[in-house]
Length: 86
Image 1 (cartoon, rainbow, N blue to C red):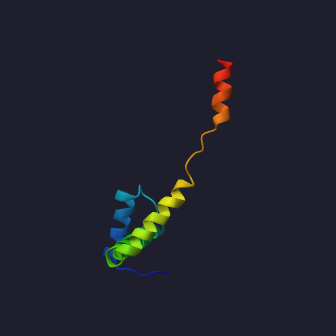
Image 2: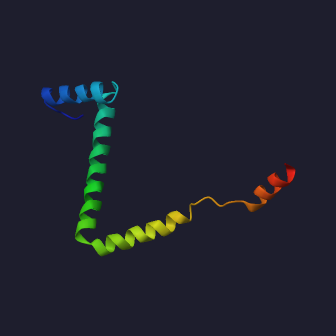
Image 3: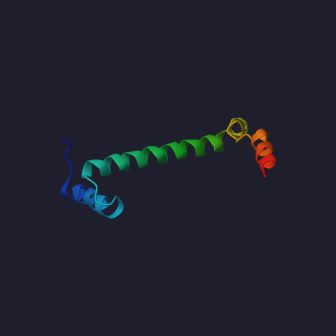
């Protein structure tokens, strides 16, 4: 059981109603915790980028290399078969 002031309870319920479509107080708190974690993660990345520009550049370059592996591969055979049927 979590004890909070009446004001805090009402604020959580208002957020649930206005921002989260009327979900439960429990779900609202979970979402607020998730948003807090995300904000902390973004702040940590921002701080890393500011504190170590070279390390950040290396990270981005590595991520770009890995992202290239996800690129779709053109199937030359499919194009040739479609053209020969036309």
